[in-house]
Amino acid sequence: MSKAFRPVHRSFAGSYSGISVVRHGGFKESCNCNREDLRDIHINVVAAESEKDDETKYVIVEFSPRWEKKFDLDDSDYNAMLQTVKGQIEGKWVKSEGYMLYDYFHANASESLRPGKAGNWRATPWEVHPVTTYTVVPQP
Image 1 (cartoon, helix red, strand yellow):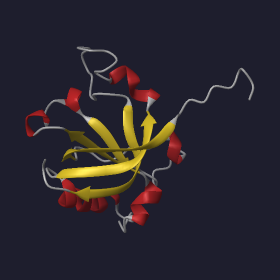
Image 2 (spheres, one colour):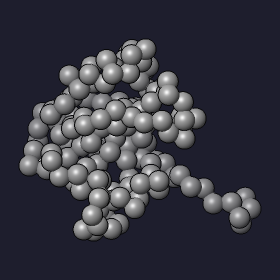
Image 3 (cartoon, helix red, strand yellow):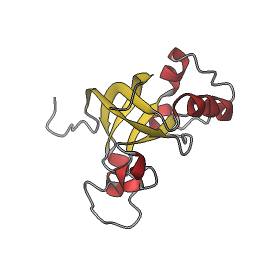
Image 4 (cartoon, one colour):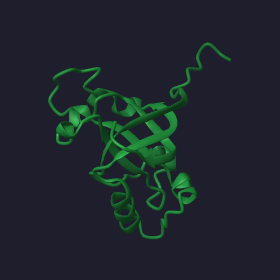
């Protein structure tokens, strides 16, 4: 490997459990070739009910388009698919497993790196992306 080459994403397996807050759907992203028909489902997860409205506590987990199909979600109508996922997990304690991804695109909006910065909307740049399995579990 050349000294000039620096990988920008490092991933490893991980999991996160918390209360799901499905606030919005995904946007066009470079990892999906910026295609409108390939959009992730972004899910914000918090560790306690009292944190649901505090964006600086959000840990992000994402269902990628290829995994949406493996979850038997119908991606022909994105908004309908998003509503299905909301019905399954919104406000419930969910364990998400998959690959941990350091999302450097949004590191500057992470409370862990820039504490107290106005406009922070996530706790950490680390996220579970893609989620490869998710399960509604009892609250601990």
